[in-house]
Image (cartoon, helix red, strand yellow):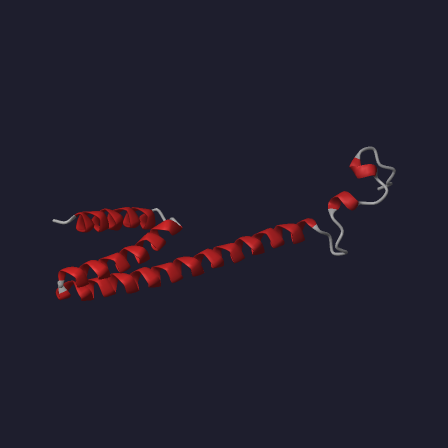
Length: 113
């Protein structure tokens, strides 16, 4: 077994571990790894491995796109939650509770009930 085969096998394992942990480096390693596999397959003329390498490359690209879209969706949902929390704190006139007039922040105010 050549050193290149060992190296790309280790890279495959490391990339898979990062992907399982949902770390962006895993997707990058997978894409780089498939290009190295392609070079290796061509150099040893093992054409039977091409479909597997092609499938893994497509899977890596699809996974990267899906992961990116899910991340954007999570960011949008978090922004909506923050916006909703802020709007709950505001009164209908758009003032925050700390802007209440006349009572000095609620401590011993002069308001008559």
